[in-house]
Length: 358
Image (cartoon, rainbow, N blue to C red; front, side, top):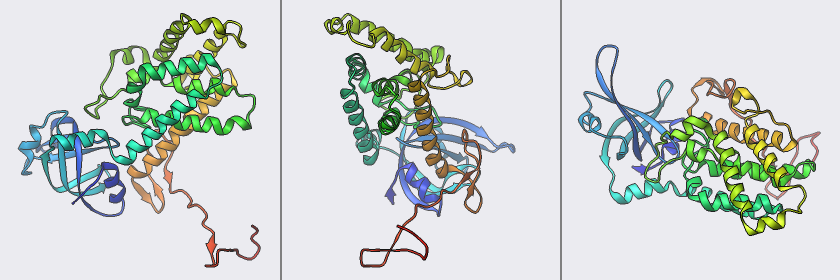
């Protein structure tokens, strides 16, 4: 059997039954029973990118073995996988075994394509920060990456809705920076240095709220994250780093700069506090500057594009090319229009229909 990730299995199972092996970590385990009183064990399984629920019935040969699994156990699940309309990804005719140390290390590292993508995204973030023109914002951002970089790399973009995987915040931040750099020439009133710093710090509080450990894929709960939330933590973090910068020798050179350092700090804090857009979504203030509004829209755009991509993998089909709603998207999903593909006549030129223009 091929060794696949949960996402690869889910994608293939949209069309047919998939026979495969998958390496996962147990992130939930609970004894349950049906309405008729038949016992079963419900396991939550996770890899670097995805999750599934496995229901182990009491008459299954592996029931006793699965019942004894603890949260954090690493296993191989081998069998036939289908995409159930009600229960999502499901397995049948399966067996299970514990993973050996080498397999655990490879699983924790994540699939090669994910590692490569997140490594490239991290490099892009560092290079983008290094090109920030304002020395205050550049130094502040580099201090953050230096002090908290390893924790940043293991933080998810959200708990469930988007980029909900270890390293997801790196992917989210890098993509937002790409969007900002593309639109900045179209809106010259934007302060790109400030916008890029705001993107870097807007979810910095999630390093405590959505942090994942080195040895697993289970996102725990942090008391600071629960009591304060990532916006408040982000504000506190920026102020703490800023105070350290002011004690640096370089800060003396900044006293004559325009805009003032205090204005830079206040506007950066505003971007963090306003990035959710409205009080009902958790922001204490609404966006009141062009950069704050741009950050709010860029954040929402990237989050929702990720929700659509993930939604098509799990949404239940309800009609031809129509899928059931996947929250928090506002309605049923519809299969996207395919990109136009010009026809080639075999001689390197494009065939056009009557009346079409190049």
